[in-house]
Image 1 (cartoon, rainbow, N blue to C red):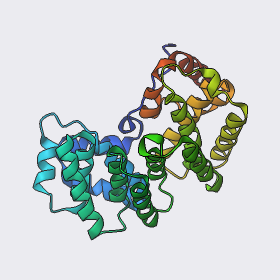
Image 2: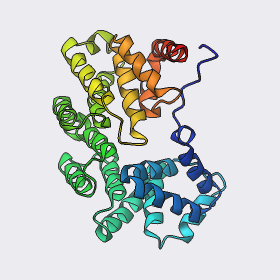
Image 3: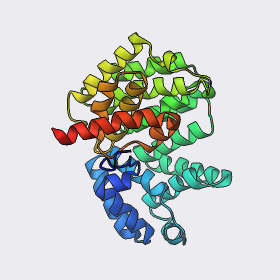
Length: 298
């Protein structure tokens, strides 16, 4: 890789300074500072709050400082949601059951809590609950936050074949989400994310040719155009959206379009999407290097 091109960075706490500060407070066990910053993010945007909680859910806690602080303040509702998020993300099966029970109580206390409903949707996905239950939880999330794109992303994952659904149904739902989303919304990327996931699900024998269906890729190009037509309203959501488009379009042979999304990303990538295509990193890194070098020359 060109030494002048930064390595892909998939850690949101490294990409966004305020999330880095939040994680540092958590690692120090400074729960008061954590809660204050979470409240600032909640006031700014409920989706930002959800993303911040997910960053904290994955934060390392080698000496148990954060875990102890959470236990000592489990009377605080935000602390309980954060502890549940960590249980779902890092815990064993017993911890996940405990986390789900805590979230059930929190949603009963505050039915309008988007992050709690989002986490219940994640729990439904991970437990492979029936699609009807995932849809019910998403309906409650949507009632609390009508444009919660991370929640819609998890719902689409719940509707995949392993959850009893079908790829055709998920692709239809992703297409509908894009068609009804305003310009700039990261919901437009759900179509690219779903199409990429369906292709990856074909296993090691999948072929690049099967990804390059002209009509489908044209639809994704149109979704990408609408995403780029206005500023993304989500402070953090553009990273996943641009990564979905950059990866899918790059693999589909639309290198110029892919390069535009890599250029918009700069050093950032969505860690989950990027890691899912590790076998194709060499080709994608070539596109990315060209995009970032071209961006510097402009």
